Length: 259
Image (cartoon, rainbow, N blue to C red):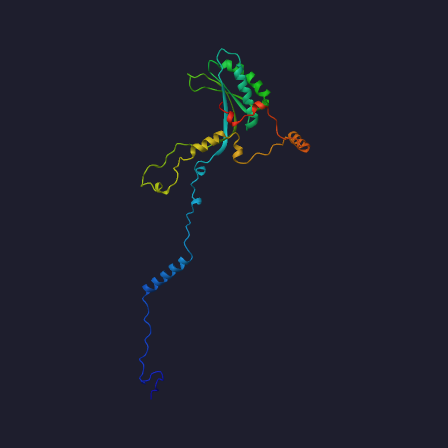
């Protein structure tokens, strides 16, 4: 005998419950993908294309390179002259002075060979060597070697050269891409500078640097003028003005300018 269900006032039997129908595999995959996308959005999106990380600096496209180069000067010696002119002596003296400051090796003197002024250049060689030695070069730092000029129409000169560190950049004037309105060029819409931008600035900066080592590391501090410091402190203790004095004629007013 079947017991009556107290929750069923009619006392009738309930139909058996059916198990929930399983979802198709494609719906389960879509639901999982949708859930993963929603969870990923909770973490927020990050733009990894940071502007500062793009190699867009002209100093990186046109770096200043430090390498060893030659510092040269030429002496025009005629076939009928037996020595140097006063200007040429001053030039050799200045060349020796710069050698002591920036050279990384000895001085090479190249004498013309097989030319009409070959004898005159050989006669002027002892005078050049004497000036260089007087400027501080040891005899073993002066090298002499002959050379044959390439063109017979040019006067052969006595060449003096020594190695030194130089700063260079470039070459400039290269245009690998079209900088005009060209939608076929992927870089046109990126708002980036063209390739040659900044090359002339880097090249001029490299040419103006007196000592290329300054681009790598700073120079050491020079000694302070102790005598000047003593004078200023002595005036300060006495209550005197520590500045300099200027004559009245050097003093002017803005209203006096242009009168």
